[in-house]
Image (cartoon, rainbow, N blue to C red; front, side):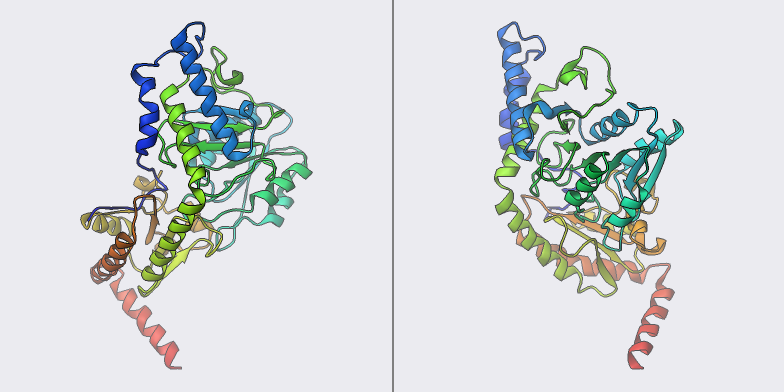
Length: 398
């Protein structure tokens, strides 16, 4: 059995999306910015139709949608584009569990003389709102907090954060790459000024995405050229990618409620089954979490070995952050919620998708305990595990 449970990393492209994209590779291949002839006009029409679809999904106006190459570019444009506008505002607030595209962008800005405050989170990964308010200064240019964490699945109180930012006259950006098409988003209700979206997380093509820019919000562009995308993102538009992204998001929103309920049932079944493994626990908020995300830690286990064993059994999962797992560095997200380094390395993220079934969930629940037992038996921490068990038994007896 082949079981793919790493949908937070990427998703297969929906066949309906591929079908929508195909004409723009071979037949309607015109440059959308050269609209004086028919194939150019066809391409331009397709881009604008996709813009309407993306805007409708988040309660925005079409003119507030700027197409990009994906989440990383969107985060860079939002953060650098805001920071570089006003030389008198040199302070940025982010959470301690942001995606690397936010963290790395802020690290670059620190080299340019900016100050960055990382607001802590609680043990579930929820941003501390009082700490966020206390971090605000007169020279704060931007607050950036992700809508839901890509590792542990916790959904942040975005509406409250948006209100805090608005009340203080500060631009608010959120990365919604994990939430768009999975949970409802209303940029008006949530007081969002800038929002990053990505196509390949929702069964669309890689290399496509968008940023919502609220009307009246100014940005300094990262790319300079022909002035495409409202002069914010120069470069010939990726028409097939944009068409695929628009269709994927439209489909995801139309199927969100039914699919969300199905995934939640599978997720909860997965969590119940895996937590029967001794010395295991769930990371992230038990209720305010993405419908497809289940993130665990196992005492005295090394994550990379666990992933390889799962792969040998036909199961694809993730350990740490999907975008940085090759680094072998402990997850900054799990460290931020208070886990010691030795526990951080024993993490497993399983994220469900359209193709996953109850039978696949039960297969994982059957296979994983055997893997954990085998790895613990050969673990260099085996002696520690024995001492840990003895201490627990002694504590229980008394």
